[in-house]
Length: 180
View 1 (cartoon, rainbow, N blue to C red):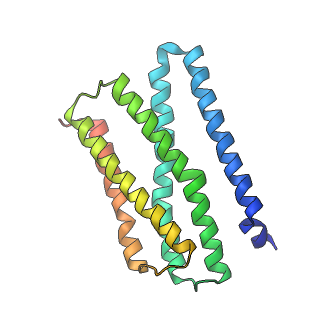
View 2: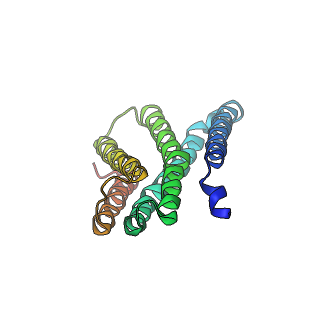
């Protein structure tokens, strides 16, 4: 019975509503910071950007693990249906909003703090584009799994799990070290 409650359509709508409310609160918080702390606004935006990136990366790291386990589940089984719900909610409620917030705040910082100057910043943006492509690949896989389309192997998803990790490491090095 508890599993049925978690995979019902109304539970999914409630999760989406909560995500929308959270984004609204986030936007309101940014506006409040702009009004109350205009001198430190860029630092606040940087903090919010890092929070969004952490949420996005958590999803990018976790989703391929779900795919590894989902690959082993028999299509149509309760286990497979549960993975479909988990994957869909992770994508729609956490990963997509976190990616969008990361992009918006990151581009704001690139413009307001750095004036889009610096080789390291251009390299970082390129790597973030590649990270977004990895996100899109995972989104496509969620849609494929949701209709029980042919699946890639668990080994494939274990290897795909490494791409966001390597990109994240390179991005952090560029941001902290600014080598060029």
